[in-house]
Amino acid sequence: MSSTIPIMKCIDHIVIRVDDTNFSALFSWLYDTFQLPVAWPVLVQPSFKSGGIFAGNVNLEIIRYGPAQIVPSPAPSSSARFFSIVFELASPTESLRELTKRRVRHTPALSYIQPEAEAGDKKIVMWKNVILGNLLGNSPLANLLIALTKLVPSRAFENTSSRETFGGRSLASKLMERAFSNGIIYTVEYNREFVDVDGWDATNKEALHNRQGGPLGLISVKEVIIGAADFEGSRKRWQNLLAPTPEVASGLWPIGDGPAIHLVPYDRDAILALVLRVASLEKAKIFLAEKGLLGTASEQEIRIAPEKICGLDVRLVGNNQSA
Image (cartoon, rainbow, N blue to C red; front, side):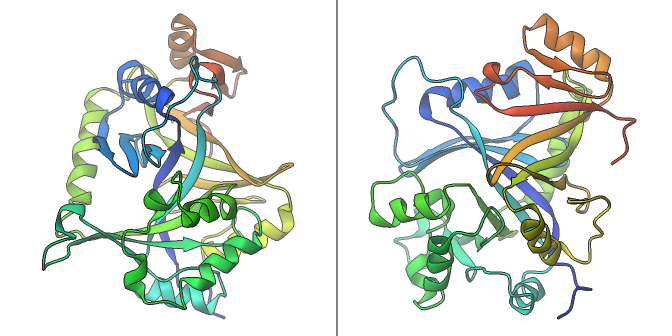
């Protein structure tokens, strides 16, 4: 089994799942209060609502799955969660072969077709997703659903990306919710003829630079912290996926120029937190305190008060800390 060919290039984006009531509030905190660039404007579709924020080396996708929701008011302060890590493949063809060689459970590449073109003669594939299994716990139902995707024609799953299959009322949606209740890890391959990923990235980097990282002084997302109930079992599966990327510390893998994956023992399997690298920890602390957003603080790390940002665990470290 080869481990010299990388499967993943980097983390492309991180999905934050939120309900309708808190969607605008969270988007506003990131854009208006922290002054981070908009990676893509809020898009409302019948099956999802999505907006993107650029965080230095990765996009944060704020998403509501399913149709518009009727939720109680006031909404709970813990209504948002880190739900997905989405990787960019090192090679669309070779990476899929490597997944098979390493026995990583995965679906075929599932196409997302431009909705406006679905009824036309020419279907424009905007991107393709590959869903990965057993990385946020070992779910028999998730393994079954992944296996089923290989037994039916691929056209049956067109536009059946994570955006289409969570939060709905259909049987498929309910099964996906149960199978991936801990969250979902998948990959994305964009059709660069229609999705100008490189152009957006350059524009967003320039915008963040011109804003000097906003009042937080944001440089980048340092790492994504993932909790694992079976730490050693999860660690082996992540190492198998990320090889030949070196494990620089127990459960820690830096990946390209994006955030690192940081696996930690926990009482359940979940994406727990983001660690942001800022230019000056002291300046960020002063800003958060002035805005009433400061949570716990130490010399090495401060946290944004989770009750102020819909329950999310977001930690800040200084730029002089090692990777």
